Amino acid sequence: MSETTVPVTSAAPVASVGRRGRARVALRALQVVIALFFGFASALPKLIAHPSATDAFDEMGWGSAGMYTIGVLELAGAVALLIPALQSVAAVALSALMVGAFVVQLTVFDGENAATPLILMVPLALIAWARRGHNADLLRLIRRRA
Image 1: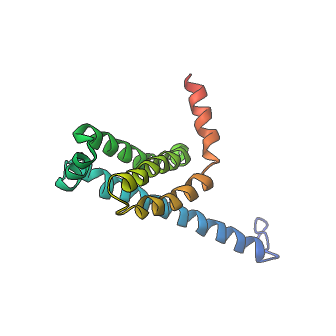
Image 2: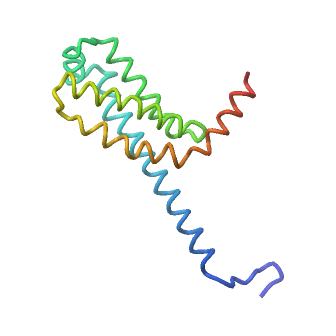
């Protein structure tokens, strides 16, 4: 054994680091999947004025302005989910959008697809909670710029 090699006396620390590492990777993968969903499946149809999106927003009475606004907010949230300092805030903001989507689904569309926003809020809440430590980094960045 060389002088710089430290013998491992217990497998427990190595195993716990492995579990934490796997959890971090799984959380990051979840963030990427959610970001892809919001960026492509949700925001893109609104931003390209796909007929399914325009019909829905016309039925709500929000028109193109509402559709583009929601599309931009979803795309911004999707991108922010991938930026470390913004991850938690983005998850909270997207959750707020999902609360609005849930209310709209109940009131305008008679509950059709009302479960979808609620289902999306579960991983968003997990991301917001797990990445809450990044909020201090964000505050430091904001204070430094002010």
